[in-house]
Length: 568
Image 1 (spheres, rainbow, N blue to C red):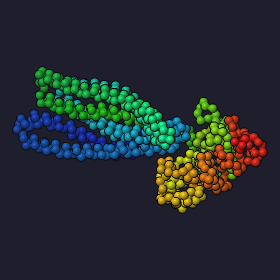
Image 2: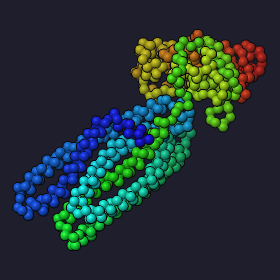
Image 3: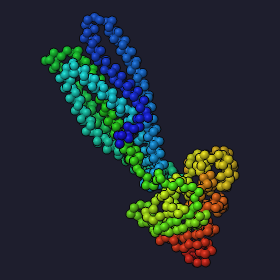
Image 4: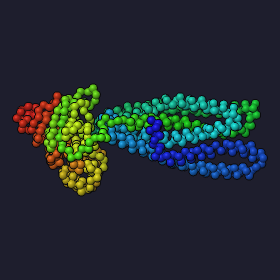
């Protein structure tokens, strides 16, 4: 895990080196003042070398001006380095999200995934900047102080650093409890984000059912849990800080008592004792840095653990480097003894399922809820893989094909069309981002949505709102079909896309889909039988697989399950 974290410094190594050099010079300048003070008090003033005092002061002034500039460099460019590392990590994590398959998103809440991309990475960014810098400065200060003081009085120095060592041991021992508390904060923060996101997305449903108080109660619980998780973290942090402050005071007290004994019995110069006190004050800073660094490390590590875990996930469904590129597909699809369940241990949605969809055939799938109609539409583009059996695409197992070329040949319109926040033009362009404006307009005309778009004041630049809230269901469906006209897939899947539309709107969507489906393999999943009446083949599904199969006339004459559905 450390190797992965360190790799993000490589692209910004020049900034890192500059930051460390500046930090080193700052530490050296800080070490000068106590020694300079001791020299002035012991040598220059007693000997009347007043001119040297002011020269020394001038040199220190220049050194402090340099230090101020270096502090700016560390504060600005150091943070810039951290921000760039955060940017790189966020891009890599976002890219990983794009690679992971449906199952990952089925099992993880959106708010938690968002937290991983935002708050957690920011804490990692702060750690990536401050921890190396603070550790380096503190090490230089501690080693430099120890060396200078050891030459003054080794035994007194060992006594003082013995107390400091006890303080460090105390801090390290508290580290694990702090880390565990911040892990809990991470988890509850993700849960909080998930509930906020869910509530905002469902605010219209909440108001429709007058369930504001119910949502407030639910939110109150997770809000309380979040506050309690921080309460435990603050308890550990408070114990940690109080202990360190106590040891800092004990260090001063130890120096006062031990130093006084050395002045009385070991001929330690009182001015050297003043130098000790000055260095102890300077030591407080690096020690505090090291201690606060431990807090930052806990927050950063708990965030990086989540990042590292996700980055090391292997998608269940991925393209083989030696996979076949699917070009000019015929659209011949066969399910052979296909069995599938969404989770291990759950009942199979499909079991030993067999179906042959011929090239250019328009096939309708109907049946009660839960018999696997939508599942079939998700298995063909390999959103999920079978537990057993095969799906052949143009007489090859779909696992042999490059997954991107496979999905590129398939167009999918679902009942719940997703409309991105942005312009209508951008939403249509999602079908093929490099399409020209002329192609966008042609696709919109083919999808029977162009006239509506032109009736809007902003036309194709009209903002759709969050999840397309400013558009009706039929308008959203036609935008989705316009995407497909741009994409020009060889296989089309219409998954209950018209079930929630009125008859007039359904006819418009169906007309656009029929135009799109010409000379293509098309799979239509529907509750409304009028939608699939003209299909070449209609497949009636039940819990045990296919009940009936044939065209409308054949199934009507059979007077079986399909006939009964028509009579309802």
